[in-house]
Image 1 (cartoon, rainbow, N blue to C red):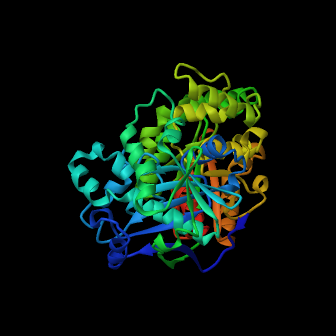
Image 2 (image 1 turned 120 degrees about the horizontal axis):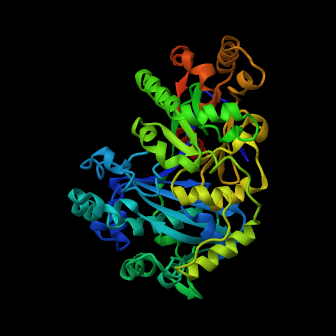
Image 3 (image 1 turned 90 degrees about the vertical axis):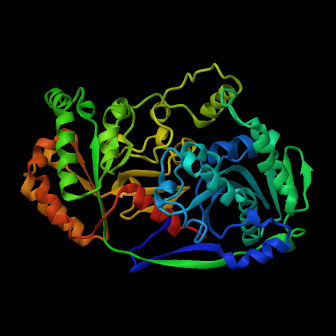
Length: 480
């Protein structure tokens, strides 16, 4: 576990290869058209589908053995492109930028014994650029060498960790991991997974892997300069909303449930209008059952959106081993549908890319385990400070855990007057360097009439951030 204590600043460790290193690459047989200046980060997290592939391809069931390398192009290579291109959600489908400009490629890695296994190499910027045809030729020409530079960074990681060998999958092995209903270009996979490893390294074949002995290839690895970026650490305030309408009170308070179901859409419109007027960005935890209905207005105003379960219920528990067996069966049959339907699986049917999850009532059940969240590609979990046993964000088992310090429940349960609740809220914020708190749409009548005044008071007490932004910071603080 990496605990992040309040400090006046924090650092991010990265490796950089500047444009002045071109001659070294040319001397090692690289083509000039395959080089661009870049930096890369060693991130202790599961990459896109990283945990699923670690189990399926390497037999690894501990997410702490997973790593991710993120490779970013730097100036002057990115100067001719608009910044928004690298944050286009349809182009950058896996959304692994973490707020940084120029993200080009990602590698999913697994450490097993003294070996490093690569399980997935991705470049949304290059492989999906047809969606922005006006930049297609320029992007493909400028960054066509992404997989070569990514492989060099993987070798650098193996050297840094003192590992004996790198095992890179054959194209045929990777293609077997892809569901049959997906159309893929075999030639592209052969270039990335077969041809590239032979271009610059001495390679042997072992079963479904290309094995690169690190010692024998040490002289062929172009090492980057290790650097650290210092970032000021200001007081952080995270405003969150649990959007559940009446689902959280069904069978408990029928009057409130009925009112929240009826008035919930209006409450949401008013919340968004006030936040837009105040230029405030919040994090919305939304039930998957009506996610599509509310997503557009939330995201259009620049807010972060996450899941708050599918329907605020608890489903029968499936051991992860059973889920994995079912997933393997589905991978072999394109016409199959899953027979398990727990909350995490249900929300992933709604959207596969949402990064965060907040469990109902902050209850960490067996279903909401770290392994299950990693398996379903979640990057952060928000729950009460009590349930997480922490008061500041932390990296644990490849997930960012974000504590919610307080919410508006006392106004409902204990009938605490709004004025007293607000005084307590302001005290929490001024006494802590990090505060995330949550307001429910179902309790909006108790706080919404005072909402603009509350935002005016907290706006100057610290820096307002979304939970996606906080998670990105924690991930990069943990880079090695």
